[in-house]
Length: 214
Image (cartoon, rainbow, N blue to C red; front, side, top):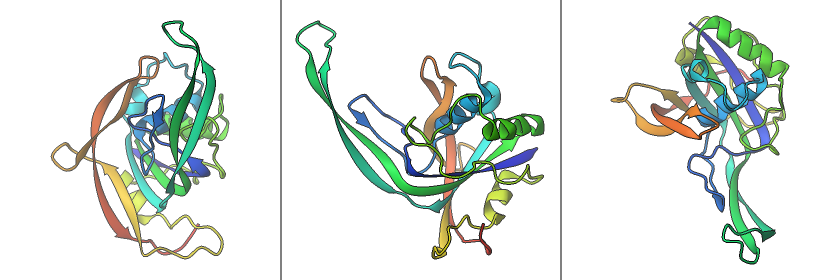
C-alpha cells in the first residue's frame, strides 16, 4: 500500500452532500464523491465508466485552513415549467467555502495511485474543486508517493502554508474508519450517471500542527 497526498486550494470550493436545484449546500471539507469525481475527470473516464477501483481507495483530509461558508444568491429568468405553463423566475442559494485549504490523502494500490498522480498533473478533462467555476489555485500533487499509511502521512506532513500566514495551533483531521469507530457519511459514489451513493464512516480529531511549512 502507498499514499498519495494532494493540496486542494482555491478562492472558492464547494463540496455538496445533499444538494437540490434551489439549495446547493457545501460541507466544510472535501467529500469522497467530489474527490473521486475530480480524479475520474483527470483520468478521462466518462460518467458511465466503472469507478469501484477509485472508491476502494481510503481517504483522509487534514484541514490546513478552515474556509468561511458564503452564499451565492442566484436568479434565472424564463425557466420552462414541466406543465408547459408560463415560464417563471427560479431562485437558488448556492453555498461555497471561501479561502479554504486542504491536505487530502489517498491510500491504496501503488500502480493506481501513480496513474492518478500523472493524470492530475496532465488531466484529460478540466478539474475543479466541487463546481466547474471553482478551479485550483496551486498544483494538486505534492511530491511523489509515500511508502507509509494514510494516517501517518497526514499527521506528519509539514503544514501547507502561505507566505506570512500565522501558523495555527491545531489542525482538524478526518480519516475513514470502521463503522464502530466513527460517524456515517453518504458520499461514496456508486455511479455518477445515476447519482447513486453508499455510506462510509469517518473519525475526526484535532492534532498539533506539524513543525515546518511548505
